[in-house]
Length: 175
Image (cartoon, rainbow, N blue to C red; front, side, top):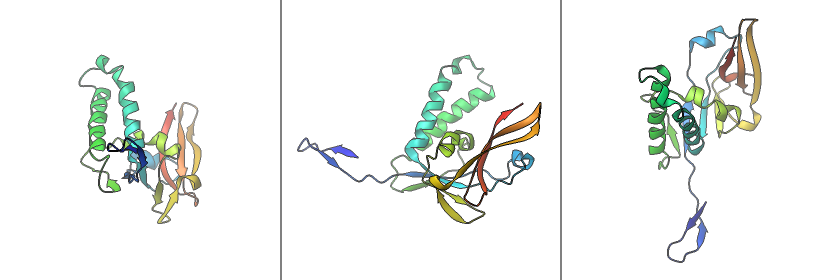
């Protein structure tokens, strides 16, 4: 990272430690029991700036429509919760600790908000509890899945370790 040296007016390279968000995907979600594969909720190390950017994009998109939503609706409440999560993330953005663990006292929106980061390989590594091993994004495998048929089907993608243990999955469509 280039930093301006105020005394000489020059730019110098400075090592700025990366801050990661350590987040374990939720376990025992009701949807996991309906799928025809077992989910071993992985623990991901996300780059804090990438997660902050994901929340900024979501809030910017929602802000276009939030004025039309009823203040008691679930979607409006989630919009406000996204803003609170973003505040929490930003307070930890420059943490002295390189790894900040997710605070379960804050509403959990990461499971769905992290989807583009997970499937895009924008994380440092993921711990597979079935293997008890950490894997870099480049060795993980993304698979499509579907369950059911015709008008009674759902599907999406899942992320599996090299041993085929699913560490992340989310339903992306429902017929």
